[in-house]
Amino acid sequence: MFQAEIKSRIGEDICILIRLDNHSVNYICDCGDASDLGVKDCQNTEVIFISHTHIDHFVNFDTILRHQLGIGKRVKICGPLGLSDQVGSRLQSYTWNLIEANAIVYEVREIVSKDEILVSEYAPPKWEKKDLGKLAEPFIYSNDRFEVAFEQLDHKIPSVAYFFKERDRVKIDLSKSNHRGGKWVRRLKEAYENGQEEIKLEIEGVEYCSSELYDLLEIKQGDSLGVIMDHAASKENHEKIRRLFSGCRQVFIECFYKDSDKEYAKLNYHSYATASGRIMKEIGVKTAIPVHFSRKYDQTEIEELLAAFKQALTE
Image (cartoon, rainbow, N blue to C red; front, side, top):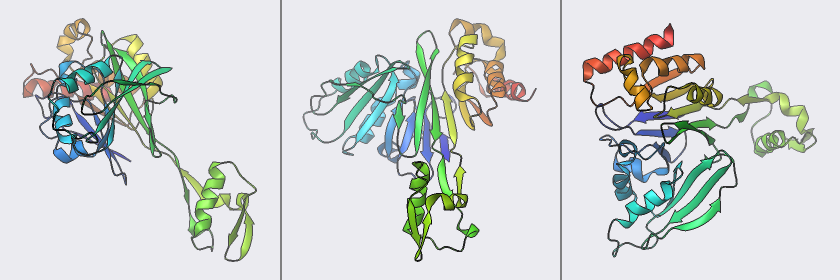
């Protein structure tokens, strides 16, 4: 199951840290100013997901860079077209005469379209851009535990929304049999996943056909989590959200403006409380969390915004 924590305090820019149970690394969504993002959080991060590079979503990249120097890992940075040159500019803005060549490598993945993702990398000490071609898979990121799909929403520029989907897992219920566990369990799971019904398995001296044991298996549905940052509350954006996030267990969605300021929301291609709450209700999100409020609001106004969001979820 995904565990997500908002690392930015009220009045700061947005930053969300995502972890997965029994998984050694973590993931950062957006690099806004965030007082609660610690050194270990940054050092254990394998991928940084950027929605767009307005200053309130990218200003803290330098702090993350500072904490990651010397970890000797390859860190991926995902986001919209243009991100690679912007990362390169940040890296080139410092003097690096004392850095070791293997201190860290950044791999940047830029979304051109649903079908085209460009890949480049930067390595010290010169931090020169190296083009690596195009990503050969449809997901912006994937590993053996989960995959990350995306949509580009309209914020007057592309703003990337991310959908984290844990892979379904095959589990075995030994209580349904008199067998003890062993190597055969892993082989049975592999046979099921690969559609191999005639694989021979030996259990305690008795040979079985893999399909004879399939009734011991069950599929555990993977968890899901969404991060939807700045976007206009438009029909087109809501259709994209509906298409990707329907039924998602937990979604963090921007709620920049109060309903009384929805004209500002329209002007600035942002969402507002009722619009964000309503689309979350329409697509059946189990836990919808409003985030990223305008810094012009005081605590009372934020509470008003949250109440409108909650009402839209329940009405």
